[in-house]
Image (cartoon, rainbow, N blue to C red; front, side, top):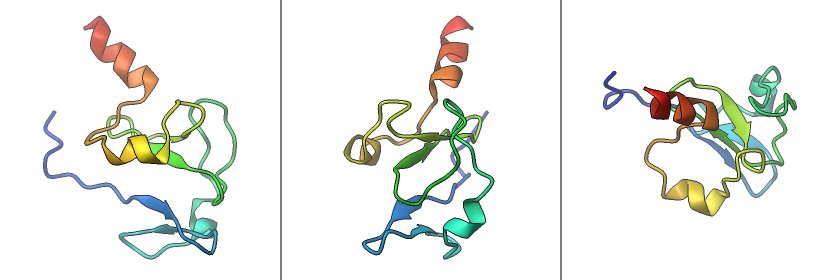
Length: 89
């Protein structure tokens, strides 16, 4: 599977506490149905989230032990579930 041409909108936390979709300028009301793939918690703009580039599920950074600083150096994030699937093959 080649993901080189695929882009995924990044969610960032702005200084005013609102989350925006950088590609579309969407605010956190557009993410109301997003649930954490680990704990099932509902999206909140005041928490750091990271999206898996394989399954496209979203996770609280704290649930997958990824900080915003660490996320900056990750080129392609694989959630724990997708990482373990790849290791078994």
